[in-house]
Image (cartoon, rainbow, N blue to C red; front, side):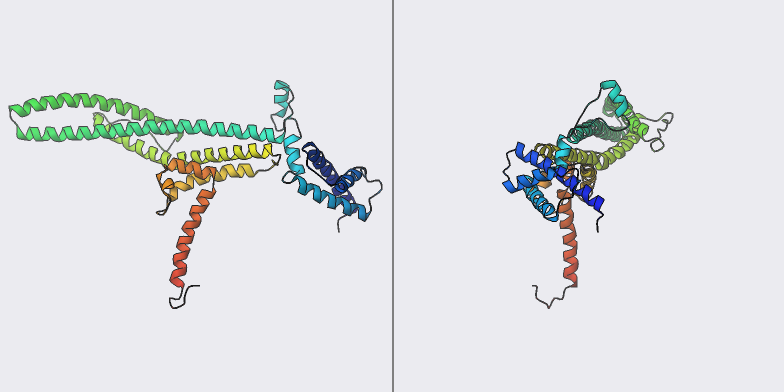
Length: 348
């Protein structure tokens, strides 16, 4: 049985919440019956509880409180407190910021909007930086592959001409040497560009990518092939892991901002860590969606989307990933159930 002191404290808290809901209902024109209004107003005169109310009075209050809560649903005392009650800055930076910028009163909803907006901006900036870095690496790798192919073709042509001999072959060899010199110049430019591109991820991952000094006398062709191999591996890691994760985070940030705006407008926002959990699950969903790909029976719209777009959608709506995983599990479980079923037993 609940102690008397704890029961009185719970009743006083409920009376305060009822008066808060009653003020909200009156301000927004929500119709309430007269008995509900009378009971809530009378309950306000019980505080402090010098003379405890009778059982009948408590019963009428809780019935009236229930009717009031139904009338204003989905608004609750917690949501009104989160969207309307203003408090000072909190945290270890509250004191320095108050002294530097002056005191500032904000609601929890306003702080949530500011915090997740800042997080969304940071994710967007990081995504753009990684995307541009990845695009530059992809272009350099593609151009390097084309130059390497041209160098191999020139080498094969030179070998055939040297084998054939003759004055005409000598003239063509001279032209090939001139083309080769120009190609070596282009190869040298690509080598320098790829080395700078590789130097960025080497600097971010010390101990993993150690730049080795080029061997004396190494041709630009050999150096470029080595730099292109390193760039292709780094570009693949970015494409498979980092970019899907960032796109998933961006999608989840957009979802959270939309949910926050809607809940604040309808006064249903409450203090909760579920928004942070939604950010984390969105990022993980964007990362995981690339591992599974699209099922063979997926819709044409999903099949036509890029992996990054799918990661963004998975971050915005994790139900997309869950639906795909459910279909995948049901496909395997269906086969398994079918293999264990008795073929002579008709299906129900």
